[in-house]
Amino acid sequence: MTYRHISVMTSEVVRFLNPTPGKIYVDGTLGGAGHARTICEKILPTGILVGVDQDIDAIDNARLVLKLYEPNIRLFHRNFSHLDRILRELGIAAVDGILLDLGLSLHHIESSSRGFGFNREEPLDMRMDIRTPLTAEDLVNEMPAEELARVFREYGEERHAKSMAGKISAYRKHERIRTSKQLTQILGDAAYFSRWTGKKIHPATKVFMALRIAVNEELKSLMDFMNNVPGYLNPGGRLCVLSYHSLEDRIVKNRLKWYEKECTCPPEFPRCVCHKTPEMRILTRKVVRPDEEEVKRNPMSRSAKLRVAEKI
Image (cartoon, rainbow, N blue to C red; front, side, top):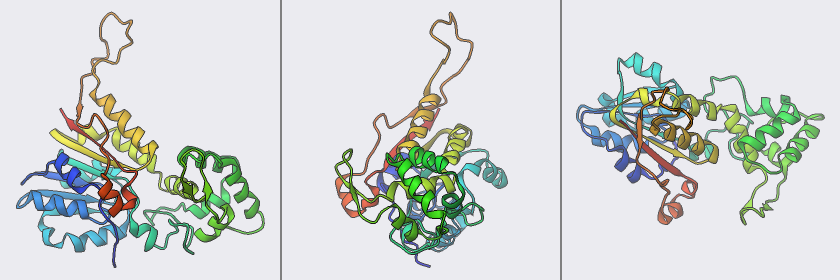
């Protein structure tokens, strides 16, 4: 199997994560294992990399890419939101660094045959983990039009959510929607000009993104993880998150700000009763973006945002 993926901002990630020999790190989204391989090189000879991915293709690929570091890796076919259970299974109390890269890989679009791309004739699946029961086909054929519109609007930030859902609802009355190309044709084949961005955007782009997020419960998984992340880290341990969507980035930014806060009592309180103390320190006051050279080399990196924080 050839798993195509270009890791984003590898040098920046490694600089912030600062992997060192003998320590323990987690790559919660292995993907093509490019970041993981670089981390492994830095933690030899006795360090441990815990590699996690909900896509079995990524796990199989990691076994090949990281074969040289086999004594140093522990691979898990799970969602990163289950990191607490994974660490318990390994007998690890906390780690020295965690990386999440929340982007879609080239493999998913080009080779997975699960309907992530709207230019291919593939089953309308969109599951990262094929063990889960719900598919994008289920959503577009069975979800009420009003709920579909909400998904497109909230997860895809699609301005035409209601009309997109209406097109789907009208079509499925006569025929079940089964493939990615079929859905693309329903939504419209020609790109439209967005007055908001000044860029040509295929009308299926945001709908496909919204369906993928809904099918894989991506925002819930991220929120579950961020609600518990300080407990996964040793003092001085760092969290690096690469996000590609404003909703993901907002979850990460807001939780990190919360962990950095001291007292959260209302200003009118005469003294603190919450006893909250800072748990993490934000290292990226300004979000880190890929440079022009990287975007030219890897256009999928253009929307990437890197945020980093350190456990106090």
